[in-house]
Image (cartoon, rainbow, N blue to C red; front, side, top):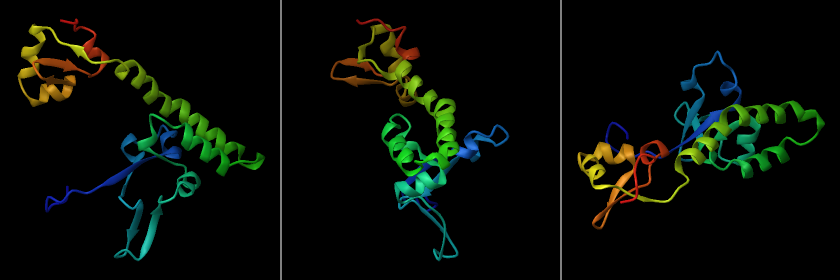
Length: 162
């Protein structure tokens, strides 16, 4: 949101080089760009960062956060862009980034989100009714006369089908 309450659409990227550098603060690793994926300065006269095409993402080693759960297609394009023996180090750098950063997201997704909805017991319904914050954090919502939970495994593993 802007100061004038106007919604702003942004894209977020992970800088591969910074993500692998332990001396860099994690907040500096993620880069937000405007909806057109181009950062400009000097009243839009100078382009500072252009990520509007996948080839630009590959060249600058900027991984789109929107692909974090399904990086295979992006990696295929990356490998085609950086093919050849002279770019082996760059491809190895991405593989290292994938092992150290991206695989954490994929494994967390499998461990936390890949199951169907569960009905809550009556005792759990009261905690869901306590407020919007509780519904957001547990992932529980009302469907007709039943409460359904689709949240993280930690929140649902204690719940029993009612």
